Image (tube, rainbow, N blue to C red; front, side):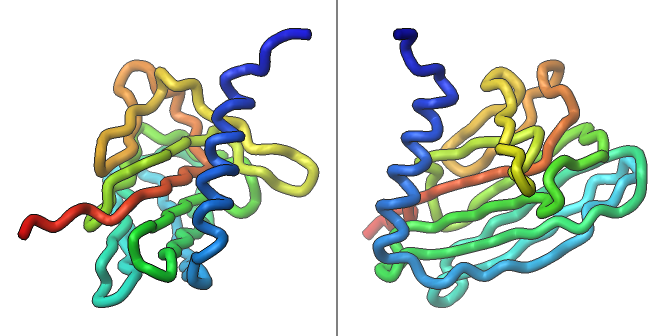
Amino acid sequence: MAAPSGGFWTAVVLAAAALKLAAAVSEPTTVPFDVRPGGVVHSFSQDVGPGNKFTCTFTYASQGGTNEQWQMSLGTSEDSQHFTCTIWRPQGKSYLYFTQFKAELRGAEIEYAMAYSKAAFERESDVPLKSEEFEVTKTAVSHRPGAFKAELSKLVIVAKAARSEL
């Protein structure tokens, strides 16, 4: 029997993180927004948590087609120590050509992040980007210039509250 692929282990890690959070996660806030083509850089940002403790900002530039309806869902754990930000096109695959993207967090450090070229829709599954197409830092997920193949339909980020210095 062959060893499970890297995609399998990624799914296991995501499921474990989601289960850990699901035990004590507040109802997520989902906000629709338009992703607009034209090659101009656009941003969409939302705050969540007590005192708007966490912020997720999606910055992008895309070409082709017309506006697409996307959504940003934000959730926090009941103790406000974990934060999730999911940005996606509910209809599955985006038909826009992304020249760049970046999802930045304020108030939290990323524990897990994944980018997808196709989001699950009806009977189809999420299709992750290759790891060389994007990079993850403590506070951002972004395209990797020269390696990103311009397809994006979903970003999933799980983060932990940043420690405050006393």
